[in-house]
Image (cartoon, rainbow, N blue to C red; front, side):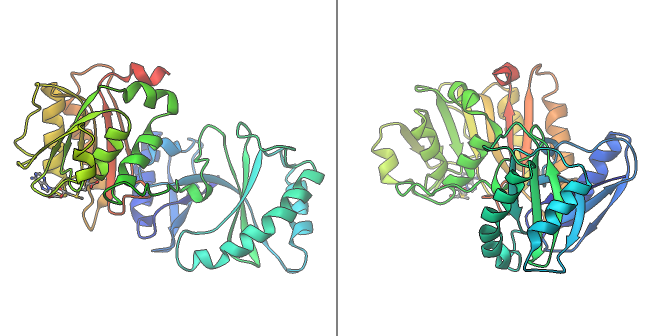
Length: 355
Ligand SMILES: C[S@@+](CC[C@H](N)C(=O)[O-])C[C@H]1O[C@@H](n2cnc3c(N)ncnc32)[C@H](O)[C@@H]1O
């Protein structure tokens, strides 16, 4: 029996639980979730010896950790001795790093200061007891201590090839002051999450072309222009002057559901129109099938209920309808900067992912 701790956006615990049930069943496994609504995490016990879905296969999970122990600190003046004892009793391995974490909720964040302060002495003690490498090593398993209060924690481990390297599983991005809208962070997170730096430099090259559906005021167009991509920005709204001044953008105030690319094809289609998710999914499939675009990044707005099931059906439909295209790659994630939407990437030529 293995126990896992998974982080997600607060309010999405049951969606993540449904997703794990469904994806564990594909591995012929079974288990059950224990969750508190709006807590920002859940516990999952696997009762089979099937393994567990990879983090990259879980749309709603920010982090995946395997639980090693639950520790209560009777003596809050000396938590370190207790933790070293627990690790010693487990014949613990050598970790490449340690993270002291908490739930990404208002109440979870009340423990943030404690976690930060406790990290320094704990790190030193772990090194002294040879539970931690002298220098941070991201190729090794990482130790995570998850605190809900300062008198107890969950001791858990993440594996190098199956985790988020971000603290709390959250990619924090700095808002570029010259960007026209905060939405810009949604596309920046998508690009940096879905593609490695090597893939990014192949996927976004100077002189490439894109269509941005629902572009205004221009946060997504800004990300494309920044990468040297020329953009046809489609929206009835007003686009930022700063973008028009670059000479890289053509703005058309027309309906994104009827627009077609000026030269019959672009490298990228991006879409941030707030519309029914099935309508957006069909539009994306239509563009990719007609070869109007080679790749797409788009958002699927989540309904109030059955959010995993809705996204799952749409992703299966997209894969099925694009099935004739060999070497296609589809990824989907509930990103930090995208509150109630799932972001999808479709690349028609996935050989780029060999990089
Ligand atoms: C969330 S905003 C996009 C923000 C933009 N991505 C940014 O980063 O600044 C959604 C936009 O979609 C546009 N929109 C909605 N339906 C549309 C349609 N059928 N055709 C074109 N634009 C549409 C709206 O006018 C709105 O500006």
